[in-house]
Every structure is written in structure tokens, then in C-alpha cells.
Amino acid sequence: MASLPADGMNPPHVSPSASGPERINARIDRLPATRSVWMLVFMLSIGGWFEFYDLFFAAYVGPGLVKSGLYSTTTASFFGFSGLGAFVAASFAGLFIGTFCFTRLADRYGRKTIFTVSLLWYSVATFVMAWQDSAFAINLWRLIAGIGVGVELVTIDTYVSELVPKNLRGRAFAFVHLVQYTAVPAVALFAWWLVPRAPLGIDGWRWVVIIGALGALVVWAIRRRVPESPRWLAQQGRLDEAESVMRALEAKVEQQYGEILPAPAENVGPAAVVGKARFSEIWQPPYRRRAITMLVFNLFQAIGFYGFASWVPTLLVSKGVTVTHSLMYSFLIAASNPFGPLLAMAFADRIERKTLIVLSALGIAVFGSLFATQTSPAMLMVLGVLITLSGTLLSVGYHAYQTELFPTRIRATAVGFVYSMSRLSAMFSGFMIASALRHFGVEGVFGLISGAMLMVMGAIGFFGPRTNNRTLDEVSH
Image (cartoon, rainbow, N blue to C red; front, top):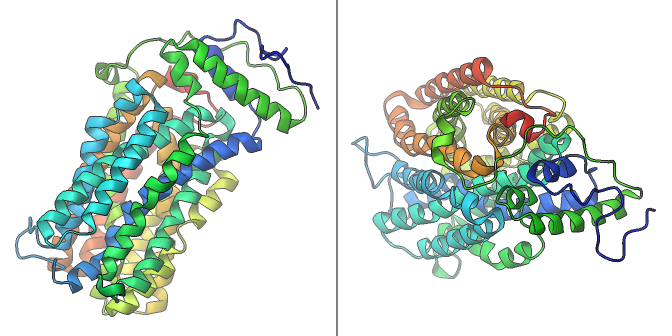
């Protein structure tokens, strides 16, 4: 094992002058995939677990909200605020506000600070929401909680992309989603147990929501063990802090690696721009085309992804399944969520990111069309699992992809901006799905979803750049 310096100076294989933003990036990109690197990814994904729990519990508490008399499944008017569509819309309205208005704070104040604040924000608002007794109050606090969730998810994506080397980004995002998606079967299981009951005289759906608010209890433990992004620190001109983070990380990695780390690449590309993020940069080449492509992509992917994921129990009920059985079937479908990212870990860095996105969207369209024609519970579950696997693979692909398209100084700002379109789309998709279900049944719902997936395939397939195994600097320039 290589000996480590005892005086706190740079290891012998790292030049003391290698502290500019581009050199910090080169030092990260040559790190081997040791336990320390994976542990950083794991801790960030734990923070995201609670956000995914929140993101998906709307589908599973929906039958309980209807059963309690607070909401109806559909409404006579398109914008009926006492229907489940309004509850789903409130979630995504908050997500839209968070991603569009506040993710830029991560570019200004740092990934670590905003990671912590947004998780606390969500936890408190969700706990308050659990005790409300009117559709209006629930929708209001659902919106407030959604703001925190929207900021958190973009911050985690940005954070992960900057902490891992270039040859690990695909697998890192697959691992993040593997951990995060275990929240989906968890919330489905809790809903199956609790929604039909009222433990201690409290409606079961409220217990499901309260469990999701427990993220505040783990946030402090996480934040103490995760460093600030050294890429962000260097880009802000805080080179001493970036150097300190890199020294500590390199020392741990080298100890676990068992030999001297490989030298950073000498050809580190053009010098990084040091300074504050400017929103106007998004509209300058080459980012303008990328931003437009991702805006179109996110507009349509949300209809397909959340059109199924947020409506699974309700769609099953519409196919003639009872509420209790729909929650059981939904749990079995939800249990497949982690398997998509698990599969992706085997090939996420071998298949081009844009190809994974296109094939996943095709899977949602094909399996969704078949789901709409089935009445057999067994076939409904099989096709539900296949739709879910396709959706999680799509999620793994595009969450990694959109963080790669923009430079560090505007990464959170740009990703939040383009991602906000998915939140806006998902907000209205709640009303669109409810209307399609009311007038055209499940077949109409999946006709809408399939059309959206064709737009996704066209946007990324024709206009998306390639990103696999390229440094973030190479892609951004």
C-alpha cells in the first residue's frame, strides 16, 4: 500500500499547481471506483429516497383520499380542484416552482447547503400537510412541500455528476436511482397496510404521509459526511477549499485502492470560466440547442412517466379491480421499480445515454398500449412491471444526461430550468389523465402516453448530443 503524506501536503503524484478548476476536474475524473466514492453517492441517494417517497405517494394515498371523502376520482370540469387530478397537480406545481425559481440557489450557495435546506423544507411541509382536513389545505401544503422536493432532486443530480469520475457517471446515476426507487415499493407497501385502515383513529393515508416526513431526522447525519462539490468550489474561485476537499478524498481513495493513484490527464481542455452563473448563458451556443431539446423532452416525458406512475391504483380500479386489490397489485408493480436501475448498473456506461432514453420511451409506448387492452389481473401486473422497468430506465438515462449538457457554473440553473418543464407538464397531466380517463377510459390514457413517448424519442434521437465517457468539460464545450 502506498504511504500517505503525514504533513498534510499534496501527495507526491499531484502537482501543487494543479488546483485550477480544470485541474480539479481532471483529478476527479481519474479516481478509481473505490468504497469512498460509492459511499458519497450512497449518502446523496439516501437524501433522495425521501424525495422519491414524496414524489410517488400521491398515487398510493389517492384511494384513501377518495375514501375519506376529501377528494373524488374525477370531476365534471377540467380544472376540478376537489378531484385527485388537483392533488397531483398541486404536487407538480410545487415541483415546477422549485425547479424553475430556486434551483439556481445551488449554483450560488453550493450543492451541500441547498441539499440540506431543501430536504428540511420538504419534511416540515409534508408533516403539516398530513394533518389538514380540507382539499384546499392539503393542496396548498402539498404545493409548498413540492417546492423543496423540486430543488432537492435537481441538487442531488448536480451533486452526483460533479463528485464522480467520467467513466462512472452512468453507473452512479443507476445506483442513485436503485436506492431512491426502493422508496416506491416502500410507500406502496405502507399504503397497502395503512390506507384501508385507521390506526389510532387516524386515517391510514395520513400515516403514509407522516412516514415520508421523517427525512429531517437523517439529514444532519448525511450532511456531516458529504463534502461540498470540489468542482463547484474551484469554479467559484475558492481553490483552497477545493484543494482541501480533493486532498481528503484522494487520501481515502488511495488507501482503499492500495497503490498510487494514476496521474491526472495533462490535456485538461480549455480553462474553465470562474464566476457567477448567468441565466442568459443558457441561450448561447452550444447550450441553446441543448436547452430547447431538453425543454421539449421534459414537456412530453412527464406525461408518459407520471401518467402511469401517479395513477396506477386508480387505473386498476377503472379496469374493475377493487380498491384493496388495486393497492395490492400496485405494490407488486411498485416492487419492480428498483430492478430497472439495477439492470442499468450493468450497462449504463456501455450504451450511449441518448440510446437508452429512446429505447426506454419506446418500451413505455408499446407496453402501455398493451396494458390498455387487458382485463386479466396477471397480464395487468406483468405489463405494469414492464412499463415500470421502462420508466425507471428512462429516468436513469435522462437524469444523468441533462446534467452532462451544461457547465459547472450554470449546471443547477440550467438543469432546473429545463427540468421545470416536466413539472409544468406533469401538473397539467393530472387534469389531462383525469379527463382522458373520464371520457375515453384507460385506452384514452395510454393513447395520450404513447403520443408523448413518440415526441420524446424524436427530440433526443435527432437532436441530443452524445455524452458517454466524455469529461464534463468536453461535453460542455
